[in-house]
Image 1 (cartoon, rainbow, N blue to C red):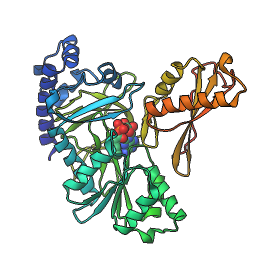
Image 2: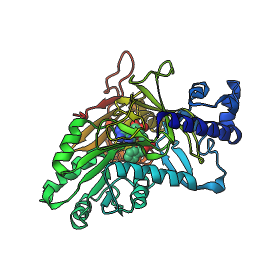
Image 3: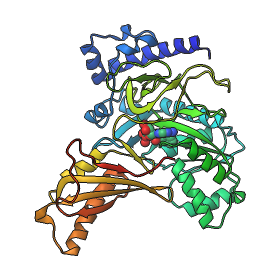
Image 4: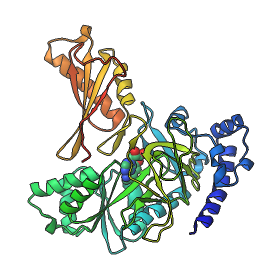
Length: 424
Ligand code: DLL
């Protein structure tokens, strides 16, 4: 599509989206009324800057379904991802949303060269996380054979890669490296498998990791990006040029803003990525602040695709950590600790990568009155905290109980995260 055609289509879809949320979502109607806006003020994509932003906090404040636009009877699926504290972010999809999601996921796979002749292993988690089911339906849609391996059980995964002659795989880049390592352990080499392509995302990765994964698994490694609030995997994807990820901008309109001033930044400038959904009907979002830092690459790609590209995610403008593909906010850990009278509100999260798998250790100070030499009691306390953390974070943390006053206090901003992972 030419730029002019795309801009016209986006303007039309934007107007329709704004009209829909204005009438169906009180949150947006009030925000727009505060700004003295009606849907008629939003006609072209240039008008988007008049609209209010949406944040994860807004989703939390309207938990669970306050921002839903479609009637309950129209929602056919829910997914959920981590909120900044206890409440997850819930996203409802209509049948039409799932159709579009399937199509954008299939676009990614097609760009990687996947066809109906491929056997494709989906190694993202199936469940509330969007990775598994999101990629799965794209694989089926193009007629390739989906193998829903999900996460865990690496030995069975490797066996299936070999025996089903799997040619494509989707998983986090760190899990891809973990698989490569496990192959050594089980006495397999890359000649025992016939992988050709991999779709890696859900967490940041680098060019060096790409080289390493490609070398060890013998495949072409491509980026896949997405977030559940906007859809899930498939918001953007690399093509064979591996120079930026093409955004499905006919469905998700991207902007880059300065995270401090909230002003739009020009082409090529690095800032926070913001998306407005253009076709979603379950929970359309206006100017959703992803907190992901990146820049947009204008102009046509050598592959011939005309849709705009984004560079790799360079970081976040908030303190969200991605651990084993799961989003973790330090504030979630804090809220659990503050709820338990046995602990001081002093803690430290130590994140590391051991054998290509992320680890999380939560160090927390036990209050003087509760600290004791009785091992059984301390073990019980440790287990209670570990269980609560597991249920809130969806990943296991190694809890380390610390003596009162043993975690260093800082004079300025407290340092609560020690991320030892090196994205080399
Ligand atoms: O991670 C969706 C997804 C699943 C994408 C599978 C790709 C593959 P959430 O759990 O909502 O959704 O997390 C979204 O993960 O805002 C980024 O910070 C990060 N992220 C996702 N993909 C990439 C990527 C899924 N390719 C958050 N590179 C986003 C860097 C990524 N970060």
